[in-house]
Image (cartoon, rainbow, N blue to C red; front, side, top):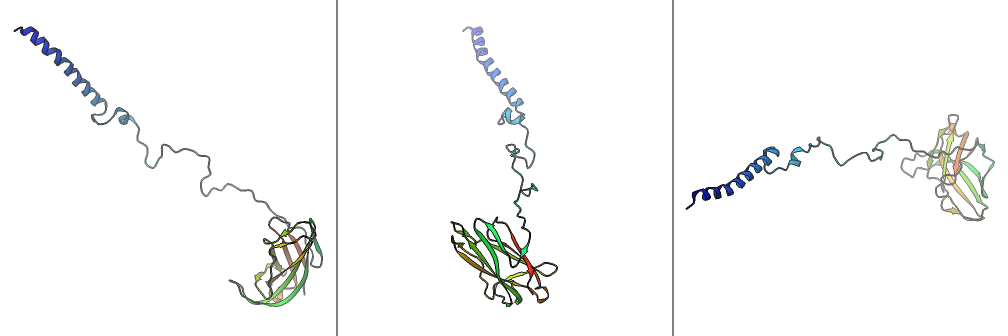
Length: 206
C-alpha cells in the first residue's frame, strides 16, 4: 500500500473541513458571539423608549391648539324706535306690534315666574320666495344697566317658527321676565335667521 498517497488523500478532505470551521467561527464572532443573531441585527441602533421610528411631522395641529379660527361677526344696526318698521331688504319688514305687562309663568327648566313683558313681533314677506325663520333669535335688555332678561314660556309665548310664505305675514310672541323697576327702558334685538342682520328696537315701555 502507498502510505504517501493515503496521507495526501486524508489531507485533501481535512483542509476544507478546517477552513469551513474557521469560517463559521469568524462569522459567529462578527455577530457578537451569538450564532443565531444576524450582523444587521447586531449593529442596528435600538429605538429610544416611547419613540416610533416610523412617525414624523404630519403638519396637523395637535389637539388643544391655540390656532385662531376666523369667525364671522354680525354687528347690530343702530337702534330704531319701538314704533318703527325695520326694512330688512328682499321684501322683508319687521315691526313690534305690541308690548304688554304680564305675570310670567314658569314652565320650562330654569324659568322663574314673576313680572314680565310680552312682546309681539310681525314679519312680512313681500318677496317671491318663502323665508325660513326657525333659527330666529330674539333677546331683550332692560333697565338703565341693560340687564339681559330671561325668556319665559308663558303666558302666551309663541316664537317664530317654520317659514313665512311669499306674500304673507306671520307673528311671533315672546315673554321676558323683567322686574317692575327695570321695565321702563328696553332694547329688543331680533335676527330672523342665522347670519341675518340684527335689528335693534329701543324705547320706553312705561
